[in-house]
Length: 456
Image 1: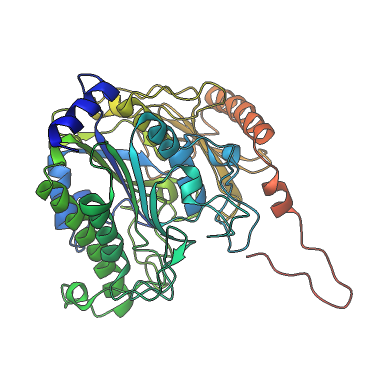
Image 2: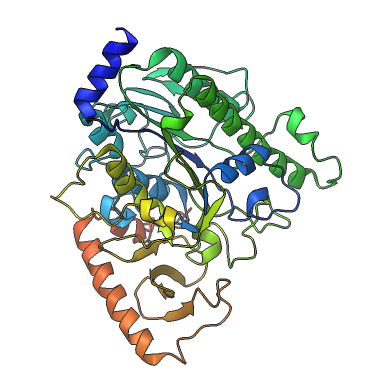
């Protein structure tokens, strides 16, 4: 088809204002403070720093969970994880999966005339590449390259990628550059160029077990701690892959017509000091798996030439669950009216305006350390609770983003208001979603003469 014919076809499909291309780039276990443009004093992220200077840096951007699979399910559906069924990280072989009954962004956009692609980590089913559970193509992707969970055995020459249902085998590359390379190949050679595109690029970096190419570890000669050096190099490796993709958009003359969002699925792994996982929360409380800020606040950067002001920042709270409604707004697709959509379009936040959403920001992570596993934020106030909703903490995030002062004892009226709202929302969510989480919460059966199997 000629270029002119393609333009005319696109005009008929989308009207005078052609729908933008959309890229959602998701890092894994990347802390809020892990990028140079978010204040990290050591880690080198030149490509993301440049990208932030071209777009809007979101300083109160949240993942939908403190752990990976639920965050990913919320991005695709706009629905909080316990509602859409993916309540926790999904072990290989688990019955838990993103159900066919959920309506995903790529599925809606494909119906609208987009061509769609997913590359990188999937982690939305237990039976990966198995017809007994839906795979990326069942959720609306024309082309996909993925792993069930982590790159294995590490980010160096992984062997567990599957492309469109067929195993790839060992690849002669590190994970993030390989994933970005697949995306670039799809953009150049595989996509239907008569259509706008939706591209999800979900890297494994810097999730453990990690490996970084020598060219990136060599950038940190001053670090004597090999674990720290490998982690920081791994973030730089991810940044390099992101830069490759952005350069490809430039070379293909697609940058000006493409909305790109970069974010992460949850906070950093480990203790940040001794254990594997040397990511930074930027001083926020707690880390991955927690519902405190350090477990759920993540980098968020949006570039949309001609619409998002270059070099701007926005402190408006946004969340991974908002990406679905944002994508729908960009593609001029109505959000489904037959189900609760928890998120709202984050486009107003790019101009410093509040996001309109029907439900408050809500988090729940049953494997969070300690008692407090549930949280909700309305305005500047955030309530944190145990799962039975019997113990509570209250924080004013605008005044205390590090959550150091529990205001529950001083703000009785606000605490009562927030408790009532949380209990109402929690009951609604539990009533709608599948009860996999109830089964997971049950203790392992005792076998005579043997100890019960430990929980993971």
